[in-house]
Length: 181
Picture (tube, rainbow, N blue to C red):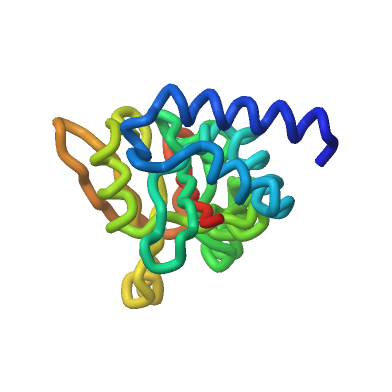
């Protein structure tokens, strides 16, 4: 990442951090910045999260490891990560109208994790997300082995977990990522 791109990304992250203090009470930007400056790989991942519309922000700190946790905090599922089936196996099963990729593969390529159901629910305690879109989440193997995959959204003031065929994809479904630094 070039110095100008790095500085611009750090400025964006700092601005979002300061605007949304309710997401990360008791976390100081200076400590987050020190961690970011020591991790070019994490900055690259955050840059990709930002470029794909995720609006990453700190949502907490892991008490056990001390790592800061960044998550996509865009109000809707990131625009640059929609219309994806769940994983490579699902993509390979599509005979016609294949999407450009899969959520699992894109997350791995970006160096981030898909949210679990628990993480998705915790995120929803911070703000209201996915009121018009939905997001793939980590799917348990017993569901995936039967051809399904899970996704979540927020409707009517509640969080819903649904299932769909893993090979399905929709313009309003993407995925949210998480990064530990």
